[in-house]
Every structure is written in structure tokens, then in C-alpha cells.
Figure 1: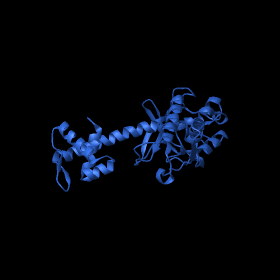
Figure 2: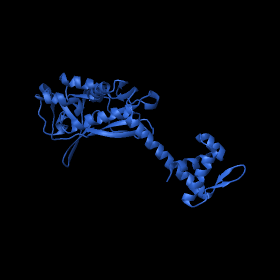
Figure 3: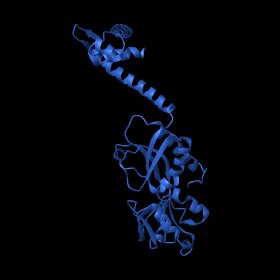
Figure 4: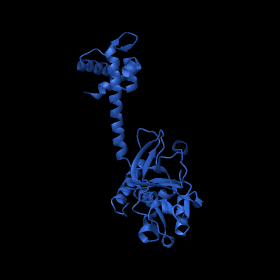
Amino acid sequence: MNLNRLAYFAAVVDAGSFTRAAERLGITKAVVSQQVARLERDVGTTLLIRTTRRVHPTEAGRTFHARCLNVLQQAEDAFDELAQAAAEPTGTLRIAASNDYGTSAVVPVVAAFSARYPACRVELTLGDETIDLASGGMDVAIRVGWLADSSLQARRIGIFRQFMVCDAEFAGRFKAGEPQDLAGLPFVANMALREPLLWQFSRGDDEQTVRMQATIAIDATPAVLAAVRAGAGLSVLPDYLVRNELAAGRLVHILPEWRLPSGGIYTVYPAARFRPPKVTRFVEMLVAAEQKVESGGEGRRG
């Protein structure tokens, strides 16, 4: 099937005239008429009713026209995708991410991206509040946790675990055999979370829900980590933020045989058919970094 003939036929139906269709396409009326006639012979049916004043599609022509538009749009999309895949990132890439994940995971990828694509400038906005991507002019947001329903397009690129932790000296002051033993201990509440005090632990089929008592409440996750490192008490923090602290022995994972709920790591985009090269390349690099972490290349999560 000759796609040009589909395009000529669709242009005639949309314009209602061979002459106007030819003008839109930038070719002669004779070529349009000839190609549409050949299309009718190819499909074996009359698609257009020609009068001296206007051209009208037949019933079969109207149905075929709708199909043609879909085929032509898909062909255009395929060419656009190929063109974008071959293009180098340029312009300004605007990214939003949370303070904790942004600092620990996104910043290193931004640095590598900038080194690889020096023609592209990066603006990274960090904060625990949810930014409206459209009004904020963001190309992509990196969100961790549990996404609320929205009209945005999202892709899960990884997962993270949550650990109950404290500094090594504080861990030596108590013994806990199960989650309920933690309820009365000093706790640093992360007020950036929806439920900073209520935690559900699981071990096999056994589940325990514990309500902690906050002795300190802080609204930024990196500051919660700083308080825990200073010996302020227990807190629940994501693995990507405490991985190095645990490996170095500065923090202790309390009750490691009990699991807290895991969350997702997502790239979130404004609604659009295509992503510019600057977005697709950056996300590819971020996904590769996440896969390296999960495979154990930079400390296994678990």
C-alpha cells in the first residue's frame, strides 16, 4: 500500500476539493486526482463522489478516511520517535525531586549527564513538597513512595526499603526482641510523611503495628538523618539514604528480621506524546544507576 495515496485521499476529504488539497500538499491537482483514482482501484470501491462544486466521501470513503488518519498518525509518530532518538540533548532540562533521594541518587546522575551532554543545561529543584509539573515548567519529576492518582504519566524505575535505625551508641542502651518493644523509646518523627508515627512491621505471616512517640519532629528527611546520627533516637529512613551509614557502622538497623513497607521510585511526566531527547537520555541514565544499585553494584538493598 502506497502511504502517499492515503495522504492524498485524506487531504481531499479534509479540504473538500482536489484543488485545495493540491495547494495544501504543494503538488499539482492532476497528481492528486491520479493517485486517488489509483487508490480507488487498489481498494476496489468508490471512495469519493465528485461534483462540479465539491467532493464528498461515500459511506465507505468516510470509514476509510477515519482509518487513514490513524495510519498516517502512526507513521508520523514513528518518524518523530526515530528523529528524537537520533538527536542529541540540548536546551535546559528541568527536574524536580525530593531532598533525600534527589541529593543521594539524582545529583550523581545529573553530574554524569552534564558531563556526557555538555550542550544541555540542567536545573534541579529539590523539595519535599509536590510540585505541579505543568505550572512549574518541569520536564520530569522523580518521586518516591506511593503515587496518588493523577493525570500525569508515571513509570516505576525502582523500589526502596525502609529501615528502623539509630546510631550505634544509642543501640547499645536497649534490647528489643519485637517491634512492640520500640514503642516507648525516643523517636525522631519525619513530618514530611503522611503517617510519621504509625509503622507496620511484618515477619512472614506475623504482623505488628506500632505507634511511636515522637520526642523530636522534623519536616525534612535529611535533617531526620542528622538527628539520628547525633543520637536523638530511633527513626525510619529509606535505604538509599542510610546505605553508606549502615555499611560504615555509624547507624544500626534495628530488628532487621522484621520488614517495613517498601515503596516505589517513579519518573513522572506531564502528559505528552513524545519526550525530548534530554528527558529520555536522563531517564535512561537514572534507570541504569538504579539497576546497578539493585543488582549489588553499589551496595545491595535488602
